[in-house]
Image (cartoon, rainbow, N blue to C red; front, side, top):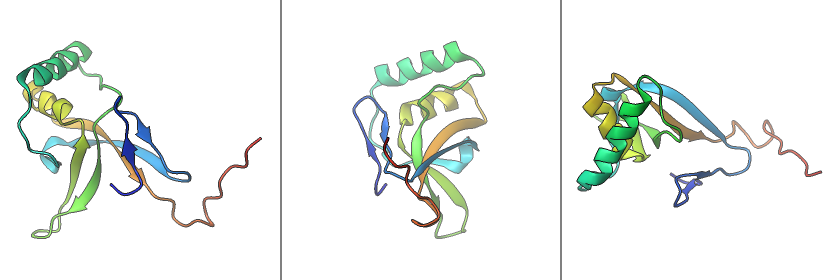
Length: 117
């Protein structure tokens, strides 16, 4: 994601003027950017946290971006950080997952930056 950096503790460094958007997305409209092996213990911890929350969602939620599929034109959410949470949601049989993404301002003139005090 250009302009976004994730820190070690999963917080997001948001560029000035940008917005973080969140919404629930159907799990079948999500794919993982990183499909490397996951440690069983990490997945289990995410599952246990998801189990403890019940119907509530964890914060920070998985972070990613929207992409359009070249073949059928469908939009998919690509998770860049939070894949263990996504897998835990699948294991729980959830139909939706809360996700977050960065949106650039419509234009630099439309989104003036606040002046420091």
